[in-house]
Length: 255
Image (tube, rainbow, N blue to C red; front, top):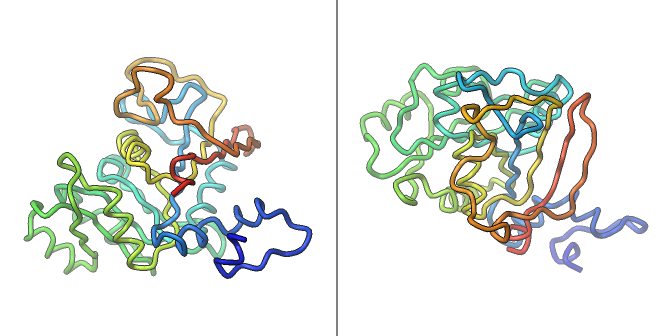
């Protein structure tokens, strides 16, 4: 019934649950006006995304990286934090045959993004949006606009960009799906703010060990197990030698 209300015809013989997954971004957007959010992480078996020196290329194998680019191709926008831009200077493009580059969204509360960053200067038909706070430098904002970047001023949450407000603003622009490829703190903020609908973890059969290596999700852990986030509708498959684990966060799916 939910699919018919959203204007989607269920093909006879296809389970409604499967049809919902195929159209999950469209259904959520039609019902709420908010983009469907997927959090993608590439990590070691013990949950690490970088060494103590910041080295992270490449933790997972080629099959996982190709699958990650296909995720970029299938989403309207890709969101990262400013620390990812400063550390890796990523292109954030879909590097697969006939791939469609997603719109690049950079969360940058203080407009620290360098004017020479690849996300500003590379050749791509996709736009770049920098989400920042009202207190950020207006002069830097104008320089970014002159370079063709859209600067979006959003509400603050404890001195940082309010991700819920940012998602609402992106939804108002017609974005139906957003892929988050953030670092540990953006990942933690996204989960704690309740904006994540689905997670996709690519897990390499590697143990990095060490307290000083970087975990995939930062922030503060709950005091009790009851505060842990539980996934539903979990699937597990191989991507080359890596494991690909996909699951849904119940709080987001109930919105």
